[in-house]
Image 1 (cartoon, rainbow, N blue to C red):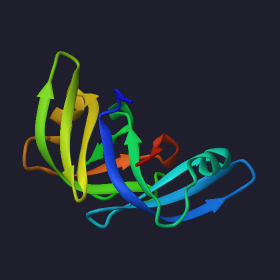
Image 2 (cartoon, helix red, strand yellow):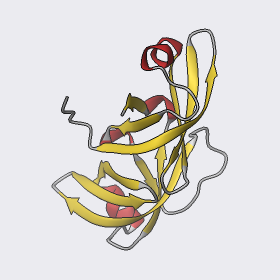
Image 3 (cartoon, rainbow, N blue to C red):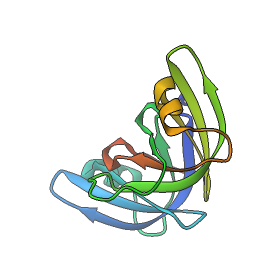
Image 4 (cartoon, rainbow, N blue to C red):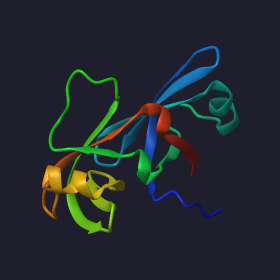
Length: 139
């Protein structure tokens, strides 16, 4: 199956915490960074997720925000440090590619945000992704 989701990074499940309807699944990327996904308990069962399961995290580029450093006092669970490798700006929007340990991400943000944050190849950034915006696929 092919997907239009650009951000597909492999990892290994390190923990699964289930609730009545929802679960949190922690995934360790090859570079050692952790990503938390909030998915349904039904999906955990259907995918057969358990500690040690090999998965891909899937995140739409429109769900990736960027900051110029770590952010505190924020409910967003996933903050992945990385380096900008490319910026392609259009009239209103921009596509920013970021290398993170264990993979790469693309963020679709406004052209104004690129200018305000002074983003260019080589810039250090932190990719912010809400756990509810992370999907998982089995490998």
